[in-house]
Every structure is written in C-alpha cells, then in structure tokens.
Image (cartoon, rainbow, N blue to C red; front, side, top):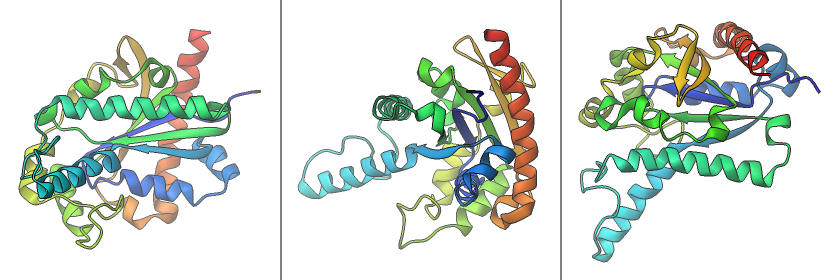
Length: 246
C-alpha cells in the first residue's frame, strides 16, 4: 500500500505561536480532506504540556502535605535542566506505547508531537538529542514562526485563569515567558540546510509556517491554504529522502 501521509509530525514554536490551533484545525477536517490536502491521517497527539503540568500540580500537593517538591521550586521553575530532557524521553515513551498498542499506528495515523524549547533550558538541540530512533526515522518537522513580541501578545490573550491546565488556554506570566522562551536556537539548528535538519545523523525534512499575522486564530481558509502549501512542500521533501533511503 502506497504511503499517503506523514507518520510523525513534530510541531515546534514559541508558546502561543499557534501549534495547538493548527492541531485543532486539522482535527475538525474529514480524514479524506486531511490526507489529500495536508498528508495527515487520523490524528494521535503527544504534547508535553499535560506532563509538565501534572508535575506542577504534584509539587503543590506535596508542599501542602509537608513534603519536598520533586520537580519545581515554589516559583514554578524546574529544579534542573535534565527535567526538560526527561519530558522528551516521556514523549518517546508515549510513542513507543502507541506502537505497542496499535499495530497500525503508522499505517492509519499521523502522530502529532508538540513542544516548545528555549535556549535557557537547552533549546531544540538538547531536545533533539533525546528523540528516539523510532520517532526520528519517521519524522517531519513544522516550525511555526512568530516573533518574541507576537508570542508574548498571544500568551497574554489566551490566558484563562479558570483553566490553567487547558491546552488551548494555558498561559505563563510575562517574566517567566521571557526567561524561558524569549530566546531559542531554531535558527541555529536549521541554518545548515534549508530543507533538512540533522538529528542524530538522520536528515529530517522541515518547513516553516509563518504565523506572524496570526492566521491560526483566524482559522478557516486562510489557515488551511497556508498550511496546505507548507505540507505539500514538506511532503515532497519527505518522499525524496525516503526514496533515497530505499
């Protein structure tokens, strides 16, 4: 059977850039449309935000019980950079369990993986070093490009104090967002090749989705048309690299 979709798509960006909105848009589409326009099949999601939010909740409970916090200090900063890398290991473990429990994971589905990384906690370079071979061998990357100023604006706009654990409505205080995410190393890791990232010696196709004008909030045709162009270019790169590997 000919492959007609991406097995694994990694969505990267600053917080608030529109990653979750891209996933939300794709999930509303019929399967046949997702595949024909975006090469995305039935969607399975892996996002590290629920994982790290669980750590924060557990730390608050432990402190309330009179025990030491395990992952973060009282201001909500991780106790060590290794915990950021641990989240990537957790993502890989979740993917491994998907492969174990669903024999047709890559045949019927596209796994959408989402996370953000700033240079303050190792950046994408550190995160890529912890991706598993199973993910890397099937991977394409979409980077949602926004400026720091736009990330800050969107982060403020989406804040819902009643749902701090919400994928679409969680937010960070300005000072924490600046410390953790103002600077990232995307340009550094992507500068050597305009088409492929070198992740642990494997060439991984990538494309950049420009979202400075916030097309992800608009949704509908403006988002669909722009995303389609990105996915089509990415599909050509994906086919080329995998034909060469055969």
